[in-house]
Length: 269
Image 1 (cartoon, rainbow, N blue to C red):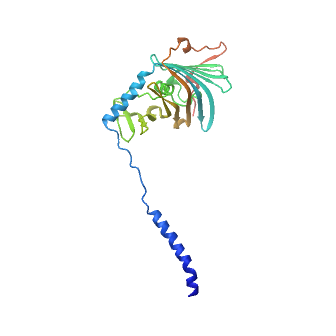
Image 2: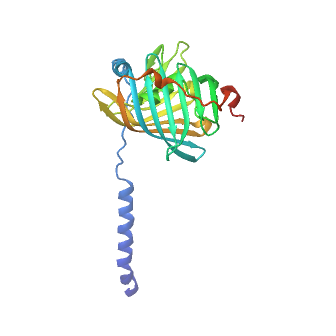
Image 3: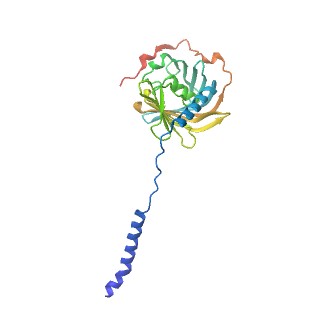
């Protein structure tokens, strides 16, 4: 009897622990239900905001840091972007962190010129010729480039818009193929992630600002899973709708630079 009495406190303690564990496991877990798809009125209202944002910017000048990550190898550079919307012209100057020019990129509509100072070459062609180039390892299109420069997504021309999931809008072409998917921040309906289906790329937006009614993201990231590449822009300063001299949209090519068609630099897998 003495032995049993000595073990009773241990047994009661063990029983208490087991009971506590059982009660903890049975505690109710709160699960937030998924948001329902957006209705037609909500979709129309959100698209109208996107269209308004597209109209309010005529020109822009921005500066910041450009980060390129290819297969885990990351490099940073300073960047200056000057752009006009109509007609569409974008000049991008990429400079090493200690001030040496690396690339000057000029895009007029779908035409593309890249001045490479390290290679002493002028690459010339169309955005579609860029393919999987080693120069810019993420697929680009005129709308995708303007999305990066504007720091706000361009909605592609579409035949129909619908919502298949909460806080998300899908744009379809005339063949009912998906061409663009827009994921929204639930609290603001600002764009969070925009997928460009034909380019197999997505753009992520963060840290939105409001400049006299012009919304823009200070952080923009283009991801290309197919190329295992990421291009990120962190905007330090941006100015909208100031006059931009036409002379800015010229490339001053040194005489000793070689002219190379863009088609000849596409990567081979």
